[in-house]
Image (cartoon, rainbow over all chains, first blue to last red; front, side, top):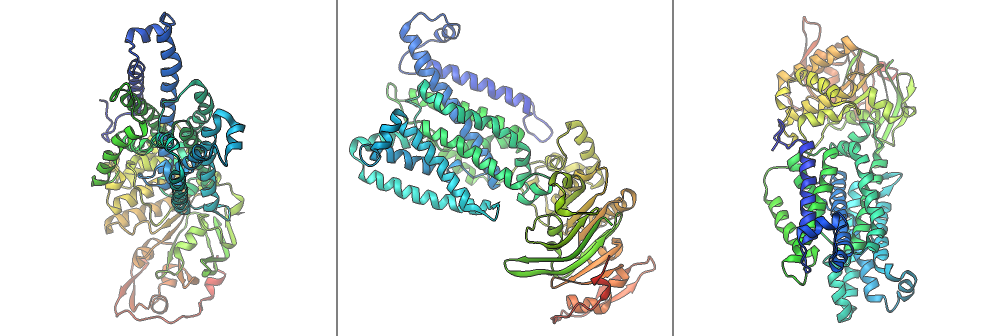
Length: 344
Length: 274
């Protein structure tokens, strides 16, 4: 492995390596699952020479959208995590901290439980989009609320934002608990499935709905790289270096909020990607956002696709919820992180 | 005049922290800001650094009101070193210094970064991670970052340094202030440095600004400001002052600490100090 003087992997080879990893994981993921497909089928499929109709259907309409969605969601969760950790200047921050996941799940669970009652009008109005749309609005709405609370006299206080996020998390969590309490058995089942995260429903329509927001996050985040670097030295230093501190904060919150909102809307709650991936990337490649953001995107995408692949394989033909899979990988890692003595 | 401050008033949390502070700083001048804890030294620096929205009064930089400068313009002419910068991410010393540079080819920043590292005796820390460095090492890296920001600036340069040598050993303190003094002489930088070490200030500063309870107590050359009565009034410190043949005073504390009562700033040179 190419390493520079600081013992870190040089950026260019690292990105190439991550990309190669992502591609490899993607190919394996395309090949594995309940319906057997060989590498040759995938190659033929890619070249448009696949004759088997069922295989083509599985490949194009089931696995490909799922793969793309998984990659995008993983990339966005990791990039949003990296942005928020920079913003809070805390390597343990997570997209969940500003309330986005809690808000999204409250809205989604409300649609599941109250969809035949109070929220019937909403379900009729939005049809199949009822749940993801509600989750998206719930997620971004909560971020906006937390941000409004943290804004005073034209300035956004990062500490207040964090506290507001925690309070909102608690309230949304109580709401979710209440709804769970009143849910019927059947509702409870789909609710549980959603709150453990899943890419199982991924179809082209879901991808078409979420992709613009997810891609927007991935395109906008790198534009914030320089001011986010300055943020690592503290909020005041951002201003001293000539960047607009408040604009940067707002942009980071909006970009992360939109991305995570969209991700949660289509895939449910998937934890730890946003925490684990940026942390690993920083340890290996350094903390500069110009490398952390693209590397996190690639690594996050590859990790989620890999976890999804595992989730489909371990108990085939059934599949584990991917959020559960990630928590199984992420939980122990988080503990390791806490036990590690050295900073960073 | 590089910096002109008149009637600067700052309130923090409803408490007046600075009252009627006024002073000037010329190009090529090293001004040391002195005063006991809580006298308002950092607040003056932060007001000039643009960190305090509540600062009222006149603050001019290079003849223009400070607020009429865009933050991007200011970043090229004004470097600020806060009292503390905590870094919890694995940035190397070189990364941190590079942050002071505007977007430019890496080779260009590299030359400037190398030069500054040599000047501040931190070349050996180049690839070390900031959280692993000692307080004094981190301070020198931060100073290098601040200098990197204005190093190739065309036009006036102001450095605002809040206790930039507080964690340094005596030899490095001397080294840093010699460098700052050289920069004022050779490149016309205006330097405003908050200092606690009276003798360091006396040796290197062209002028001193002594703050007391949010007001200007006195301002002038080291031998004008560092008098036995001033130290007694402001710090409650009994000290002997020796005038060295090198031309600056040496402060030798003698007695025990005594509480100070509030004293009206009596020195008229301060009020219209320019």
